[in-house]
Amino acid sequence: MISNFSQNTQLILHKYLEALMNVQIIEEHSLFSNDELETSDSKKLRIWSIHADNSGSEENKAFIKDISNQVKDLDLLLASPSLGTGVDICDYHFDVVFGAFHAVSQSATECVQALHRYRPNVPLHIWVAPRPPFGYQETIPRKIKESILEINQMTAFLISNDPETRKRGAEKDWALDAYCQIEADRNESINNLRDDLKTLLEDMAYNITTIEVESDTAVKTMLSDAGKYLDATHRLAVANADLISSTEYLARQTKEYLDPEEIVECEKYRIQRDYGMPVTEELVKQDAGGQLISRLILLESLIAPAAGEIIDPKTGLKYPAPPKIVVEKDHRERDNLPLCIDWHNYSSKWLAYHALGFPKLLMRLLAGEEISATDPDLLKMNEIALASKTHIKTILNLTIRPDCQKQPLWLMGVLLDRVGLKTALRKKGKRGAQITYRSLDLQSLYFALEVLQYREQQRKEKAQRERERQAKAAAHQARMQSLYGIAPPPPPTVSTSPPKKGIDKLGAELDTKNHPSLLVDSDAENILQNLQPCLDLLYGITDLGLDVLKEIIKELLGNRKIALNLLQGLLSEGRSFLVWMGI
Image 1 (cartoon, one colour):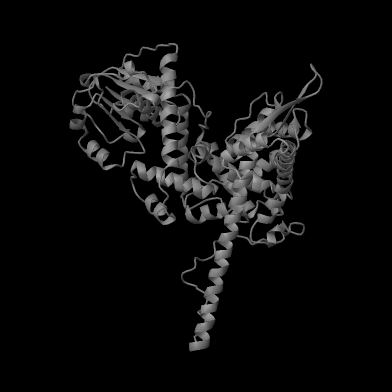
Image 2: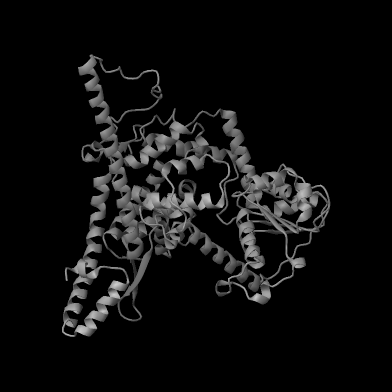
């Protein structure tokens, strides 16, 4: 039996089979009963798995090189799209081929290619998602091209490049047109994957039998439990992995394949570097493979103040200028990625959030305000989103629901999730006439503030190290000149890249009169100032709880036995409350 699944499905099934067929059983932690796991040697499945994380290993390279002979010792071969082409199994061995396609990355042609890596004519059992899980994509080449160029042009304008000359990279017209055509065909196939794949198989003379069945709840539960069990094992492995240096981490990023131990060591280093706190199982779970830190970086950019105003000379319209931390990312991409289709256009996304009015609503929530469904700013944001839903989908990849104005809090919840924050619900008013209010969840807020403060401290330390390096270089040059009369070298001309055409310096079109943040090296002070109301609120809550705790302990000091039991309980949690409270 050979199975070709999308990577996520293949990994979940592989996890389930590993848990189900594991020979070594720890009874107190076993997910399944002994009756389920007990099997004779003759019944043990021989399984081989190939996916993106292990396809570069020496074992899998040797396996793929002689795959026709290697599979003869297997009962089941699991393969992700990483084995979609370039491999043939010509000899008969497996009785059936299974395929599960989620309409995410593979077109119908690629699905057929994957299904026929096994050449003998055997039954195919195929499941296809009814619709793309992340929404339908554009299928007209002209519109795809227009969208790419318009967003690139807007970003170039926001980062003070010439919008006309810097909206394109090094690619030729024919190359961009070909890319848009291929992307449109691919999107059309993925949007209609069920029908497209069925048509292709019918053209290949397959007899198609469509079956609609209810999902097997028991199997679904077992697969879910197996995935959770092994996910917990992975989190534990990351938390207990050895610490590596930054040099070792960078060296491993250039390797084609990493051992499982090296993978968890690299993940632990990345998490500790990104969050600046001890790596625990809970932190690994929150990080979710780097998703949370990406959201917090977006939060950081949205609470940073605009760097002045940019005036469009053609229309006279005024736009807020993105902060330095956003502009620098766009400049780095344009300096290092020659093709415009690889640019992320962070400044345009930043402007889209500002056009919605989300940063204003976010700052109110950070200041401790509660938002109801009738809030004017919230209603205005939903109105703008509905009127600009096409642009929002293109720039932010966010589908605006037609009924968003009937449920105004939905959009705010989605956007807050994108910046790594959660909300808490509270109802006010008399019974039968209560109004729902939402405010920021204190736990997620406090965590986000800790991370942002750590990132700001890292930037300051990096700037300080750069200043020290420059000071040492200047002192060394002065010493050389005083001792040997060696004049400082002229500024480099050959090794420095020439200025790029079409890049305008900040001038009359950028109003910086009322925005002194452009005069400093970073947006640090302004970000911290925006966060100060939120920090004051958290500190006030902490101080209030501390005062209450002090009063309780003072009341209990009259009963020495009760007081000692309470203090021992507090100290058993590893917290030095006595020192903390000055008792």
